[in-house]
Length: 536
Image (cartoon, rainbow, N blue to C red):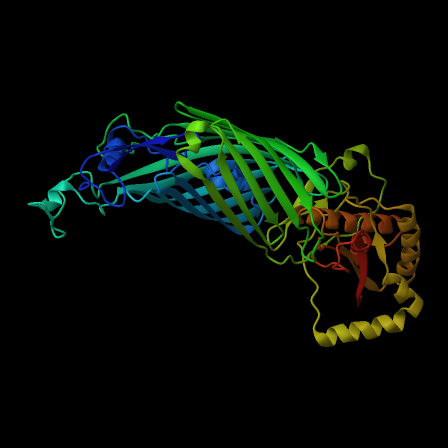
């Protein structure tokens, strides 16, 4: 008995086989695969296998929208794997490995990325290749960014030759040493690709994703992928769009409905559903989260996913369940795995030494002044407010480094010139509300006492070190920490303390007083510290 198999591609770029049983000789087959499938591949099948559409598309920027590459804030690696089993005992497998490297350029971020892809249509057609991508992300506001991405690739399709054909039989006996004369075997086809996309992302005040929208064009050059150079066998132009908006955010639970539209030649489909987030007990490194996803694919597929996210890595799995009668008899569902590893560079404090100015009340124009960006080690952004027009040119950032002997000498001088009560006051911190750089009334009263000490002891240089809690992104926290230190600087200079006595630092979230992620600990971590450096 022979299985006559016909290969089809469904609108979401998955595959399925239909079969019927006839009574003919089996000599043309090996591993239950008919040569008729190869003929279909050569004449009737448009190869979408190298264009995978992952169900967990938010974990696959290269195949969803090149603009999404620009949203990667950390050096990271991503693995995506998709396996579709079919009733004939075969499967279609796609494996993808990608890496992302962000470079911060002032107010913007440039992300360079690369991808390796292996796609197998059962055991007879394999596609291998790679993609190079680059995306430029512009920070439109403190909470939003717009990214433009471009990617190109090179792929090779190959028909494997591990098959038995009739011309390898001599007088009814199989001769393994004979070479098949069938021209379809061991054929290869090389082709390039080019794709581009835009992606807009909006975060909330704590750095969590609130909304996104984007669109991309794939296969802009429509390469010919035919093994026999048929003019009509081109990889078709494809348009893909995604959007999502968080409709609910509680203390731990969130709801983010999403939609994806794919248009490729005559194949159009829609994914509509929602992601549901639940925050677990926070760790020392940050928030841990469970992300559940439920979508309906208009190609009669139901998609269910679950992912575990934390600051260093994410792991997620999904399953596509056929809900249409035709599909359910042809395939057993689609399994998908996504793993992301984030490699974070340790942040360093960068110092801005500012020249003395006479403090005046800020005018409305000064209040709305643009800010200048200073880059951290990971090239994170730190913002230094532009001050009054009378300000002198700001010196280049410089770091005060003391040897062990110098530090000991400084400590002895401090003990000699400052009383124990004064040292105790300067060891305290200025506290701030969540996501705020405004001084409270209590903070102003405390700074009045600090200014009295500094005005009475004019021989010391002071570090003002801004800090934040771990809520929000590193980028926003680096920005906020320097703002807090500058607010303390402005207040103290308004009380007569000379500005050239201060060095302003922003530590972001990198140096917490408390590692526990309780609200009490976060409140104490949101602070500005005083550090008496040296006798002038």
